[in-house]
Image 1 (cartoon, rainbow, N blue to C red):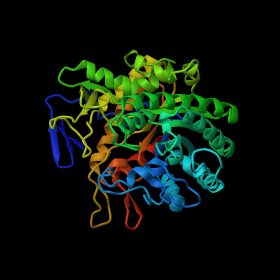
Image 2 (image 1 turned 60 degrees about the vertical axis):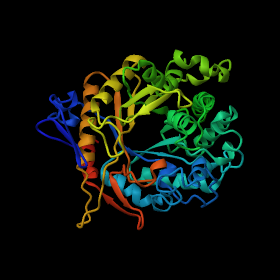
Image 3 (image 1 turned 45 degrees about the horizontal axis):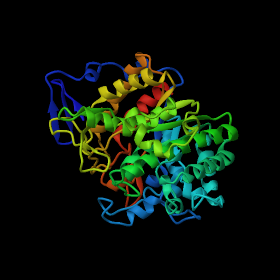
Image 4 (image 1 turned 135 degrees about the vertical axis):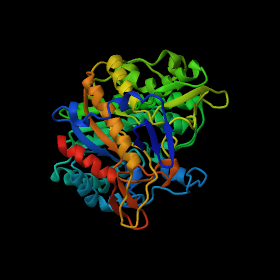
Length: 468
């Protein structure tokens, strides 16, 4: 992506031009770090199933994503995370990349099935030991660990008992959180309960694009509430186990735009995807639009349990979505691909950094000025290794620049933004897209597992090292 003098945006082989620049581009001459406060946290993020590999090593149990990938129709290139980036074996090399980047924080997730192979019962010492080695290495390199307990890879043993559709899974999750807290709490200062639970609910149980591949409105409501309940129970356990730790949750929030003057469709998607998780966690209520549908799963005091005081809120932001009502889907709403005249990435995600600015202001105004960390932001780009062994990714560099400018403006506007984590450290298994979409700032040659920093790596390195 490149911003041209006539206000054109170029991504890959396509270009979009406008008569007037978006607001973010009017600020393009600003220095990104002008408004960044001291002690701002610069970091990168990954997740266990997307990078670790070694799925049958050291007692790790099976996950719903292992099962989902067994059906070749589910993954576009018929791949899986069985090897991925081989991070389980190569983590020392990856940590040195984080150090070279100048990042002072690393957000990763623990694989529940490495810690408890079935999701309940016996603790797998080898799994705990791996994460201790990982965290020790981070600390030795002056990188602060940010540990996420759940990044979608639910143990298959729990799925066999109903998964997130079962209320019992929320209590099993709290037990798992306590195990992690007791074993790693003296080393890890920051804990995240869930990463993007709204994606688990909608893509996994509503549209069926992700594991476990269901399409049921009732399942979405059950999963939504039980994920929220699990969050509250886990926060309570961690407060008792690691009282000094900072605790939060991470939601991906995508501003929803009306499609063909259909405010009902956009309002429903906003309620299901954005507010169904932020409102209970931060306000103690469900949105009116879904309160009746979800009420069958809500028991007395559940919302009080969910609405725990948090130390921070993690925002994942990539794009803006368009929605319309649809009777062809279980949820009564569908996401519409942006028109070709709208700037978008190779993944088809709309490029609109102004909406990050607006999203941050909305969070501040709706939920109070809780400390916010952007815990994921990035894009897939058409990366190629050239004959000189270099990966030039100007599209991603420009994407980061424009979104960081939007974040900087939000800070200037009074948003209590405390940190930014780029997604992702390296190319990895991109869920249903397999290895066809590269989000990393480090190129991974999967046949050899060679890591090659891209131009975007060096762009962020310059920013990170200016203010860290």
